[in-house]
Length: 206
Image (cartoon, rainbow, N blue to C red; front, side):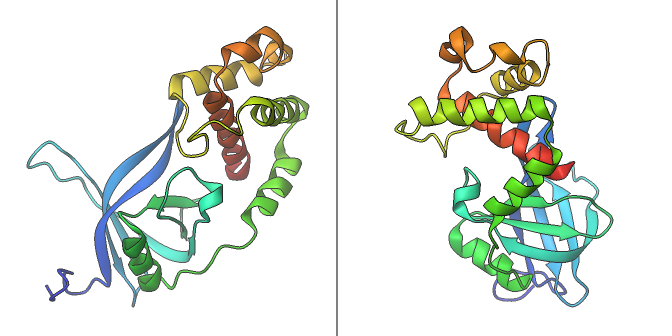
């Protein structure tokens, strides 16, 4: 181990939070991560609060690393990586801005491109009529009452409420009643905002 506390053979290591999808939304899961720059090996060990139990490490080979633009996610200090033999982007949250910088330096991370435009193109290609209707209604609801709510883009909606809203919104028989009319008043702006973001992320990973 060198003076920085890094075990020999690893360029960077430490705790990171991985954005993972669950049945009723998303969650941030804590992992102990290690990276070897020479071989591009990236190891993840699930953090377990129960003393003495260590999970088997997952090993991947890094393909790319990009800093996550703050306006595209409701958490700070995030970055995206892609790895071989695993589809989609893995989004991590570092412990601080400096911690993220060190991870990006180790992984030869790049600055983000216009992710919002990319998201729009992907959503346009992948959403059906029901999905488009929900997105239009969600954006209208946020613009009409949510833009001045403190923490709207930082504080996520309750997973159970987000899951229920998406379930109804994507059901052709119930979609017309979602977000507008009486249902509009029952949904909080944060729930609508989080549901819209979740739908975009799902479309990107399809």
